[in-house]
Length: 119
Length: 107
Image 1 (tube, chains in turn brown, orange):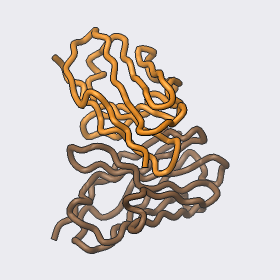
Image 2 (spheres, helix red, strand yellow):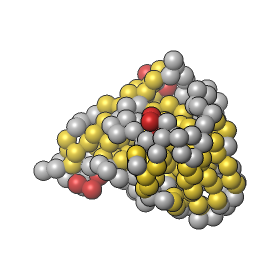
Image 3 (cartoon, chains in turn blue, red):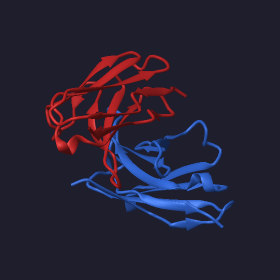
Image 4 (cartoon, helix red, strand yellow):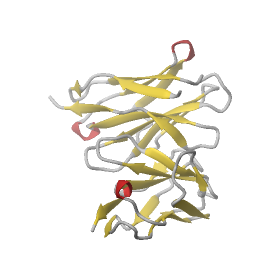
């Protein structure tokens, strides 16, 4: 059974760095073709893709946010970590992690974690 | 980045109706397109990938078609549990992008 769960702070201050952890089970990120992606959704708005890391440790980022994002993995712990620097109130959103299968679509998602940016 | 445009942004329909949602890519993406359903307070759920392949466990009333730049999601006979927001997503190239969503409401 594949599961993913996001964890991290619910509240961060402007200019701070956000660190989110995705802990997953039911698959291994060392398996060829496996990837984990991060997606966010501001309240009442659309989904926005953020970043992806694959089994070979290749990393891909949103064009508009790449200067602020870093994604990494700890295969032994079944975790993927996303950091976002210089947080702003417009970054308030529910942040999801999801598994990407070899075909490219996101087949399993975590329940999401709401991050509010406010002083 | 490739821009994905869905239409309509929202509309109302009745149980039993046949509905079609369209998604247009700003450049050709072959069949690297997925459709997701999202209900309030929940994570998105994968419905269709590779433009027309039904994800396991998804009812057959959902279908997808298209390739290149123009795609459609069709629900053949709306059920009460289908009222939700639907998103398309391209995975032809990084960075991946989603459409703005189509909210399907009960008439």
